[in-house]
Length: 213
Image 1 (cartoon, rainbow, N blue to C red):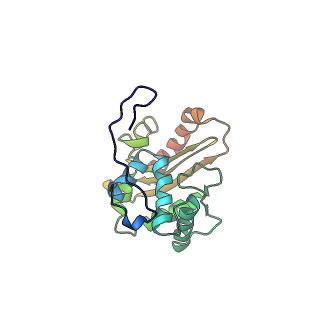
Image 2 (cartoon, rainbow, N blue to C red):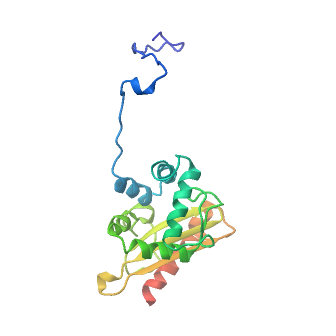
Image 3 (tube, rainbow, N blue to C red):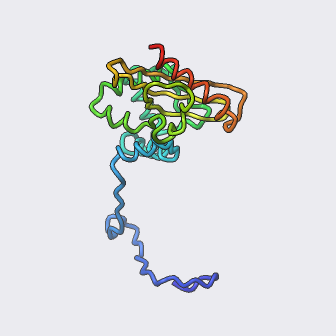
């Protein structure tokens, strides 16, 4: 290749001519991603929305009819129907939930958790969630809430809405774990303000569940 205008020298690269038949082209490169469980771990533990968006498109490509967002959401909707969730409980528009068009009820999430607890891969899922005062998006939560037991949970933060869903681990003391799903919609605070105005209230609710049940 010629020297570019910026004065940078690029090594010569042999370009294969395209003859119009992809079946006769040489295989150039293959990339194998990490196992799905490792991708899900990073996605949930650190709330990586781009991972979620890519994953829903991959579902559309591998299970559905194409690799678009709509194709992936169609696969999600089939799954929701399969586990008994109706359209009034969950409405998915994207993979990350950042779209205002994506809606879900707390009861729907609890039904999803019940389904997960019946699966052979349940430990992979729960271990991928952030743990209170330990890691991920819950590392600095509950410091003054009065929580007695550890919490595994997934946060949700958007403009004028905050949520937290997960499990209180009471079985370590011989009790029963508590599944919860708390959503605060249409509050008057910005995303930044909600960190100090809304999140402490959610944390306190979870701590009260821990203390009283």
